[in-house]
Length: 158
Ligand SMILES: [Zn+2]
Image (cartoon, rainbow, N blue to C red; front, side, top):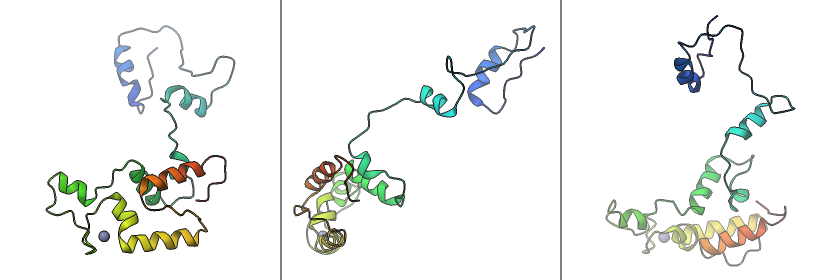
């Protein structure tokens, strides 16, 4: 009788190679069960995945009906990871950090989303359309703090 490891499971290849010269005298099977219970993919996944701490912004950023690029952009914003011109200029990648809209100011995260005349106008209209009465939408820190406070309970208006 020979070993019959699933060939499509790459995680078992090392085990398969290690068992090549080990003789088996009877039929054997690999099985994954919870003690006293039956197998489920959910339990298997929960037992092998590494769990991480849930970040507070997760409730705001990720939800099932979102258009994928929107939560990604919002996630970048919470991480302050947008490659704005002020960062690119500090890395020496671009020559100027001036906002391309011609307002004469440096492009930063707060400028991009709150200070530039065009984006400030868009942001205030978006807030009005959504009946948001948030008066201090002047920078990312205030907006993030406000949004995180709104996630307490289940009343956050996305
Ligand atoms: Zn600008």
